[in-house]
Length: 472
Image 1 (cartoon, one colour):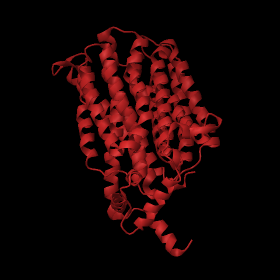
Image 2 (cartoon, rainbow, N blue to C red):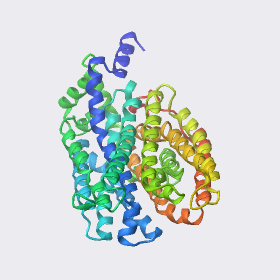
Image 3 (cartoon, rainbow, N blue to C red):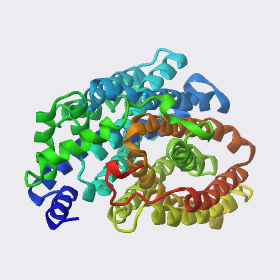
Image 4 (tube, helix red, strand yellow):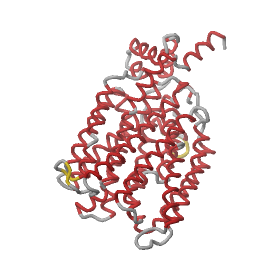
């Protein structure tokens, strides 16, 4: 490579400092969908017991109401890539913002249980869209040198959304004198919890009008001049814009519009790389992480913690989630994706195994013995910390960058859909499994955390520092 070519390559890989602030704003605005993803996913934690009481339903029916949103998530994730390829990434975000808003209003004012379930499916569709379009858009806009950290914004936004939802739930519960069904603003407290999401949903919609369309999408529809402008904004005007556009265009000419049939091949239906994406998604969920965010208040109450403290512990867990995510954002481009995933898996095995041991103890007067109670609480925070500093960030970053250009949108959609289906399986099964044997339930999650280690070692390739056009 000549010195000129090397200089151009270096310039293309590093955003100039004066442009970095603008790129950060773009990534943060796009990641607002991740905030809503986390908020909407976790806010139901504060309403679980109130819904059970109001509609007088058992654990199995309750689990279906909680988990039904994930069916919408899977559908939204599976279709978002194709929608984004047809109408653009920004329009896709705006549709998701509208669906989040409608879902929040409907969930806060349900007529019956089926009505509540329907609005949760609508919100789930929006979550699914946000889960795909956020990381894909950020990966397409971010300069390669910063892509890992900027891609981490999606997960950072998710965990902040989770934390804010738990803080809001805790505040609303206290305002309602500790009663999830207490009256507040003419509604029951749990309805207010679900309705507050209108505020960030509207903000997401407004922010979508303030950020540019993806250069790759613009080039795909022939808007080369606008693509050059945006590339100049995010990568610096000193780079060879014509060469950069040609590089993207050449890569796109070598591919066809990605579709489901493009993913087929190999010995087991899908191409091997697609199975790796599906595997990452499934392992991320089968360690039981979303039990901590959908059912933690119910879980702590089931072992004798009073409602107000259980809501507080849900909030502290979400703070630990943020801390772990910040750690991952710092190291994802320094250490790499694979090492973080392995470190996280080891830590999760330890945390989950300790929880399984603590929950194996018989309750005394409706509570865990003091030692087991503290072990369970600390281990739950350890588990969430190691998940957050590894799989929580790594999976979203890798799904946004690991697939070849020719299949990226469709493959990301399938992998994200697999993630939501796995999420549904864990969410729908937990209440019944917990009623049967809470300790064995955590043993199952521990086994999946352990199995994720050889999976990463054997099948997952490092993507740190590579251009999207280099994925092959």
